[in-house]
Length: 54
Image (tube, rainbow, N blue to C red; front, side, top):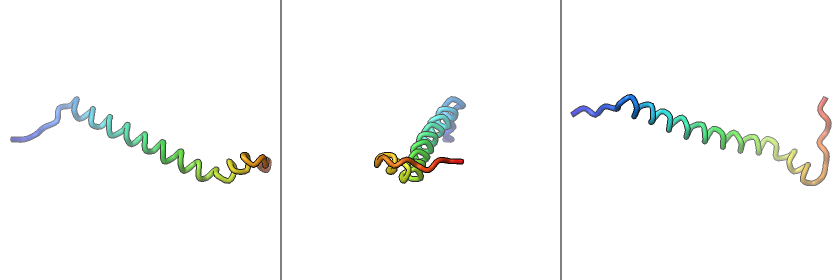
């Protein structure tokens, strides 16, 4: 017996996979940005102003 997916099952599976992938991408991107900006955040917490950008 051959197991086959219907079109709706295929679309639902792809949508679920896409949603999970987007969520993980968002979370890892956010964590990466936090690490990149950690020195700036610490300076702001201590009250040091960052150097102006030209």
